[in-house]
Image (cartoon, rainbow, N blue to C red; front, side, top):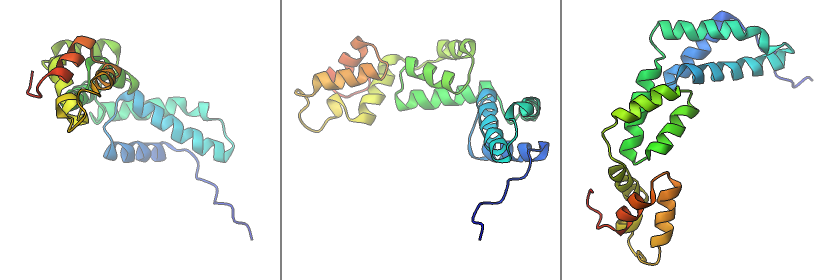
Length: 174
């Protein structure tokens, strides 16, 4: 008996549209990220079919353009929402820029959004320390772990002065 899985169906515009819609039902995305997701899906299916994935580049571009036209993919809205979410969690501006760039948001859009961001680095650092229970939010061994806590904050993208001020502070919003 042959136990191999059945051969997948060919890549069609309808299948690609459904795949993109299914992905966007679950996740917010940028145009670049949606394009990468669809390229991976097409590559896997073409590999199983023994076809060349590069032949479907125009079809992927057309699918992404259709979702932009339908306003289901909007880089500006995605970046604004993600920025607000990350800053509330206590993510530094440096890490926010990295995370947005990783998702395919353009550098100029990232810079514009960060320039308009009203959250100070000190406030974000305080939120990060509280979430991670660092410094004044540590239950015990605070003095012994001061340097480790400051180092963790610096690795998270905060400047040394902000990190040290938050770790040495009393835990109230700065």
